[in-house]
Length: 371
Figure 1 (cartoon, rainbow, N blue to C red):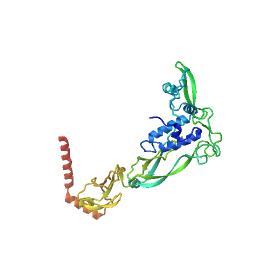
Figure 2 (figure 1 turned 90 degrees about the vertical axis):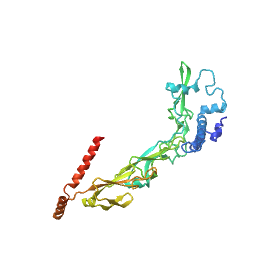
Figure 3 (figure 1 turned 135 degrees about the horizontal axis):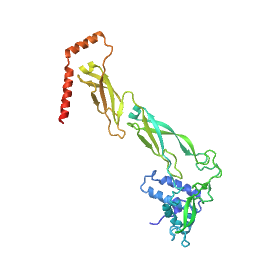
Figure 4 (figure 1 turned 30 degrees about the vertical axis):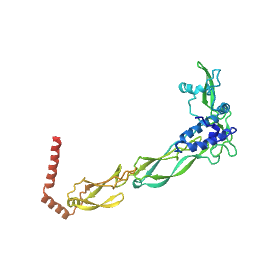
């Protein structure tokens, strides 16, 4: 299958300058970048656009393409004769530390990712909420529209590299004359020279601003977990897509509930009378109070499970349970009458309860030894 004409790919003509070519490329790169466009052929179109831009943005390659098109019999190896291995330099440099293997400085680059730590209350993490945060990040300068040049002017093509951002350095070796590519130090590889810099951004093309972003806290999010907000990181370079924003959650502890995964735990203080005779008590849950029957003879440390009263799973896989642990409170500052009644109870019951507990304990030890 024959390749399309590079000018047709970018939608420009042969008389177009570097700025027009780059503008057309940026527009198409945003349109077909695989991170943005999920169409099946987006990746192939993005590669086609990038290939066309790599050739037409380089004055030397552009001249070569205008003369030979896609059917150059020398395949870019310097026109034959004379031992000039210009096209071979990329392969050679990959092994011998040259600059040919470097990434094209004018190629689109995705922006850096950002991270933000959000502190939320315990129940906000349980039930979720929508909120707004403010983050510092780079934004395109509105004074110069991101060009970095003073309004009314525009960046000039670097006269040293011809706008390619790279310089060819020749070197005679045992293999012949090798042409190595180096990043142009005059323009730092951008291919541009800004004579009159924008006063707002100082020629950077971006300014630091505080950006407000809406965030949906997922119900069930736990301490230390994070979510990703696509495209809310630093802006990309050369038409590349922006980075992502990662929000890490710091969940405050609760004064009554403790959380372990999707389950919550709590303790309920009960009197000796309540656990001895049994009672129906009110227990706080994440969604309000419910009734819980405590059987007569309940021992301290006993735990009751309330199914489905825990935290909703952050991935939508059901809901955890609530575990209620009973803790018997020993009364203080008893009146004389209360003391007398307890003494009578003790004399009436004797050591029955202690004997039953000891019997159960020794039975467990005996079973443990038997294996």
